[in-house]
Image (cartoon, rainbow, N blue to C red; front, side, top):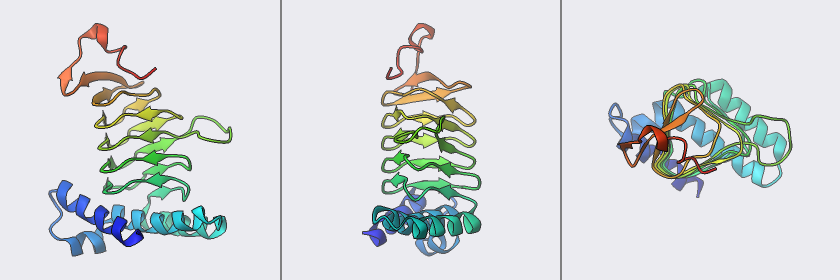
Length: 187
């Protein structure tokens, strides 16, 4: 299963990164793929309650890739972490299939409480460079969170959100009228 996940991540990079020339290049030279490979092993240890080994693997990955993924995070298939330096993914984060995460992204919590405290991303979500998604809520399928946005509230499917704090500006690729922009979050 881990090998299949790794292969799907490599193929995702080949499909979505125009600079990728071959699967071998992606496998050997892409730090985002390396971070995902390390994470998949760390997560295997984490699920088996071998927390020290899981954390050791994740810390080694952070050292070598500059991408920090907590071993408890649940990551789907076909993820692209592009130019991933500075990416932080918290313990209770869930990332769906075919998501794209750019450099400097934080999928983090906003408190110190126990339990679910990080976001859940649906499938086909794109998170722009420097964006922060903070808190325990859902971002729907096919959403885009713009570069440097700070998202603190849930989003329905097919929404583009921008700004600080992030607000919806498009649904299904169509600009929202000003009065509707506050109505499309999932609250």
